[in-house]
Image 1 (cartoon, helix red, strand yellow):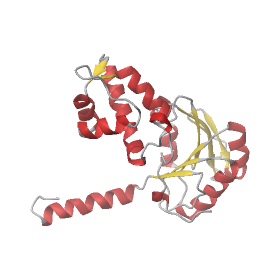
Image 2 (spheres, helix red, strand yellow):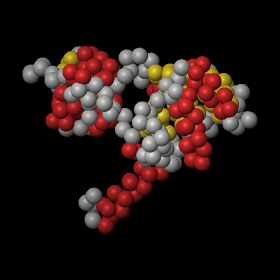
Image 3 (cartoon, one colour):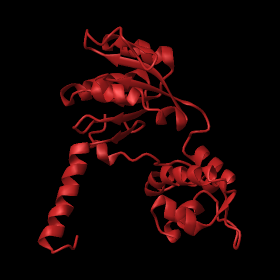
Image 4 (cartoon, helix red, strand yellow):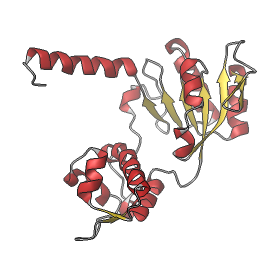
Length: 232
């Protein structure tokens, strides 16, 4: 396995955009925001949108948005703007959401329960197909319409459900072992909430959500503003 930090893995490496060219990882990271902005625009009944309007909704500059969308081969039309429906379809395809992605949740504690019941998973083109835990008081119970299965059967669950993405909410001490088992079972995408770096092979993508680290970064900027008299 490659010994690389979780944060070093970036979704989007080598993903094809315009003319089969790779879409830069930083651009891939902004595409979900553009998709949310387009969905909000569509819900308002708009068929067309300008780069200025879409950028404002997504929280980026118009120049950045136009540059990012150029990797998809979408430039809009001068004086007209972007076709909302067409652009949504383009981004959906590039993000790999044209087909439903099967997701397995490992670790059904408080956070796991919340994620299992999170409506946004289905709304974004994913389907939760399995729940796994080791706690005897949790295994066998039903959460979000699914029975929680034992972690000893992890590989069997992956093979039976066809899950290719896993959400990991286990304690840090067992996260690497569970990650290894998921990879061995055929999972190629892992979203981890465990507060530690994971080592994975080159063909596996890992995204880390570290709430404590994000709070520490906010604390740094808060302190910088206090020390600098308001400047960050």
